[in-house]
Figure (cartoon, rainbow, N blue to C red):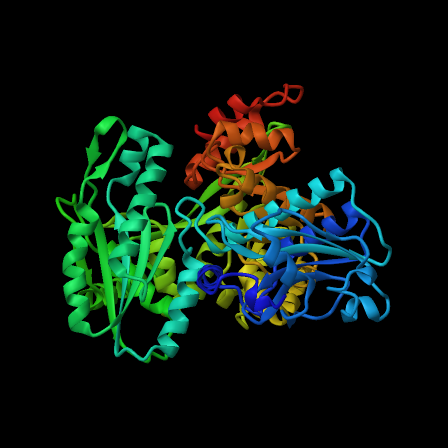
Length: 611
């Protein structure tokens, strides 16, 4: 039986289209998949194994242990037969390939080391389409026992969960931000259509709906809105769910066609949404648009950021869905850049940039273990401006190093004042941008600040994100060594989101692994998130690094983490970022506690940090 006849052509085309939803490329690897593969091999006593993604004529192996090939022909492969049998069975096994006419001539069987046993579990995506297989092979003929089969099936589900969380939004099943930008970039480079309109959709007052009707109803609303946008855009265009109440779309074609579609969008979004018990609710949205002719040599990220800027500029309480084009925002953006530079230069009329500090705690010991410095902009007209509004602006206009050094200087100044007051100072972590991390003056400037304020290097921790490692590990590693030579601690931040390989994070020593909030917030209620958290916890143990969980907000998640020994956390459950004055009050209370006082309970720790 040939591979082309294993499935109906129409069904196979649907399956191949589903694969594109994951934006899997031949160049990317994922340490989580490698870890699952290794565990699968060990759990059944196999010799080699891998994860195969089955395309039309090729099989790609995003994870393989014990073999070198990254992709192999589909024709004649073991996986071809698993694909054919996947609609009938959830497990496939060849006890002795030498005696099986389908495989007795396969090179893996006929050539050393002569693998005879093969077992595989089909990988079915969330929408029921076959993606590929999790497989293991061994040199001796045998039959797996039921417990081993069950172990492989469980790990196959974990593989699918990993792919879904990496590439697809968990609530809606739509392409996530990473995949949307991947396809948008390809579309910008390859489309034959003359124009693209990129849109950013931000639902207004969704949080209020979520609180009033519950998360389950809120998730239904998000799925309904995603389906509406997908139908509205059509199969030839792109739609993605960026998380929470935000979506993105890209329309390819004539600009006049886009104008007609965008007129329809207001009605599509604002149609009443059905709620439980026959009720209905109307949501409106802020929609930002960026137009550009194609082909476009710039980045997909730049277009989406421009649409985001246009969306965020729509102020006030919405009475209807409002669409605004980026062109009208150029003057506003230029003015904000001017004001940011004024604030950086200390001109009070443009507001004040200052560091606030979010506590990091060990709740089992009842102690404060650190602070993370987070910059805020107190603007005279806009009020408190949060980092996501101005840090991208600073990065795009080459002001980020000045901003990062301003925060570092304040941190050193605050720590010196706390030390002089006899307060029990804890280490402070800073998240430098890639540009600042690699800036030629950064080590000299850091050394001068440490000397001027007489701050021991070990009292500072610098966070390096996974994406920084993935992009420039050969540059980051030597610079990290220079930071450590000054005594500074190093943390790998946002772990689980950047998908750098294990070689990247093993290229230099680090002290702490910070689990990204998406693997902490809601971990108690999601088996997918829980499974990935276990993998990340295992990686921290492998590298003998302290594990810190970011984004803790719920009591249930705290209890889940406590049962698994994850006792170092950061998040709103304990405290939001606090002003330097509030930190002084907290440290003063810690200093004044009796030496023989009992460790603080969780409730006492929360009360203290919210003082």
